Length: 81
Image (cartoon, rainbow, N blue to C red; front, side):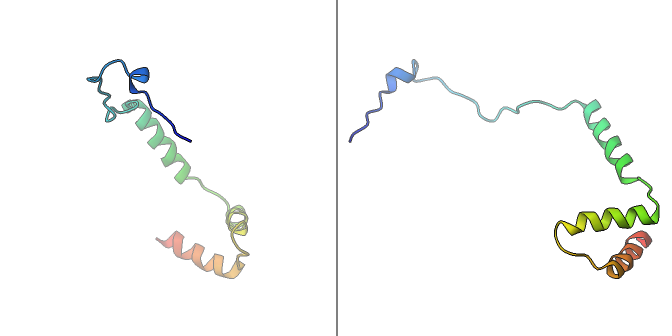
């Protein structure tokens, strides 16, 4: 089985060049500022201790069964940082 590729069928000019280094879309500064503001707001969320523990255990349980005393110790270390 042989396949033939006819170049003239697909290309009309041999000097046709395509610049692949063109950026897809430039992001406006407003968008960057909005994204940073949203990230800062998400990082500064405040939760009560019980809700925080529930959220941590829920997110960790998809990966492994967390030990509650170890989570509490590490929580204290993270809060002090």
